[in-house]
Image 1: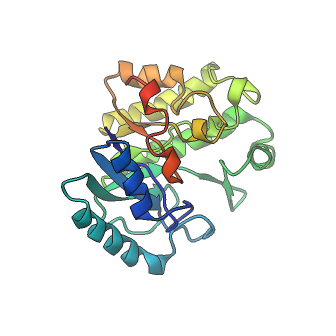
Image 2: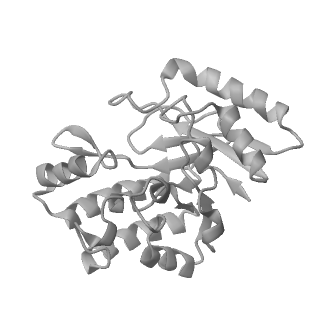
Amino acid sequence: MRDLHTHTFYSDGKSSPEEMIQAAVKMGLSEIGISDHSYTFFDESYCMKKEMIPSYKAEIAALKQKYAGKISVLCGVEQDAYSSESTDGFDYVIGSAHYLKVNGEYRPLDEDPTAFEKVCRDGFGGDYYALAEAYFSLVAGFAERDDVSIIGHFDLIAKFNEGGRLFDENAPRYLSAAKNAADRLLAAGKIFEVNTGAIARGYRTVPYPAPTLFMYIRGMDGRLILSSDAHSPQNVAFAFDRIVL
C-alpha cells in the first residue's frame, strides 16, 4: 500500500517529512510520497516559499537514503492550476485546483464554507452549476500538462456540500461539466486520486471523487489510487481500509 499525497511544515502541514515517513513505516506502507504545495504568487500563506524548495528536495533526498530498505520515499509536489513554478526535479506531480479567478481575484474554494459560498455569490450570482462549469474546465486543463500525472481531489467544490446542502451533485448540468473534464483527463492518461482528506477533517463521509463520478471514472477504465491528503502523521493512509478501488 502507498500514499502519495501528504503535506509537511514546508507548506500547510503540521509535521516534518520524517514524521510523516515514520507514520507510514508504522502502518506498513511500501511507499510514501511527500507532496507539499507548489509556490503560488498570489497566496503565500499555505504553500512552499520559493527559497525553501531546494531545502525541501534535499531533505527528502536524504530521507530516501535513510529509510531505504524500510520504505520507498518519493519527492512530489502538489501543483496548483494557477501556479507557474517549475516542476523540474520532482518524482511526480499532483495537479489540483484550489482557487478560481473571480473578477480578477484568486479566490479559495476549500478554505471554509462561508468563503466558498461568497465566491459563488460574487462570481457566479449564486449559480453553483456555473461555478462547477468554471471549476471543472480549469481542472480539465491538466490534460495538457505532461508533467502532471495525478489529478488531486477531482470534485473539490463538493467539500462543503455534504448532503447536497448547496447543490445537487447528480444534476445534469453538474455531471455534464464533471464528465467532460474527466473525459479529457482520461484521454490524456491521467491518474485520479481517491482522496480521503475531507473525511479525516469531518467535512465529508465519502472520498473525492463522489460515488457517481468514481463509478464513471472506473467504468471508463480510469486509473485510480488512494490518497490521504494528510497534513499530520495520524492521518497518513486515513480510511484506506474502508475503500475498494
